[in-house]
View (cartoon, rainbow, N blue to C red):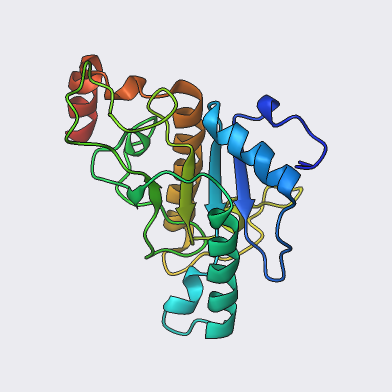
Amino acid sequence: LNLEADDLSLFPFIYWRIDEGQQTPSARVLEKLDAFMKTGGLLLVDTADQDIRLPGGNRNSAFATAQQGHLRSFLSQLDVPPLEPVPTGHVITKSFYLLSDFPGRFTGGRVWLEATDRTAEPIDEAPRGESNDGVTPLIIGSHDWAAAWAVDGNGRALYPVTPGGGAQREIALRFGINTVMYTLTGNYKADQVHVPALLERLGQ
């Protein structure tokens, strides 16, 4: 995806992994990303630095400081809504698979998205305070999801995941599927008509 040249309206979901040494996006790219998020697009920003917080982490604090600096610089130039950690029962936890955690190659960090206004009086079952048909325009995490999803030409995983191995990779894949389903279908899973089916699955 070439953010300078491509029409972002053709991409409902963009994954942005913040890399070491990344250059600050141009004003044109930032303007396009703002418009993307305000017109129904979902931007998943991944600092991919959660491993330094794990026992035996192999990267130093300077890397984390650089990643967080890139993130702050990037977000400061966008119209970012108020954020909160993914709350229990959020639509993204049940848009396809039922999830309570969102690991990637690493795990243990918080995943953030647009805060829901729980004080507002709802007019239906959709969550209030989310911008685009109940879909947050922004998700931020540090779990390096792309590395957990990556495979070679034979379908073999390219990178190890830690500490949960294959089971953790499966949950990472499920998080990716949930995110795409959530992006494409909005808040329909918040509708109470789905409650009996969800309760049945939870009991299995």
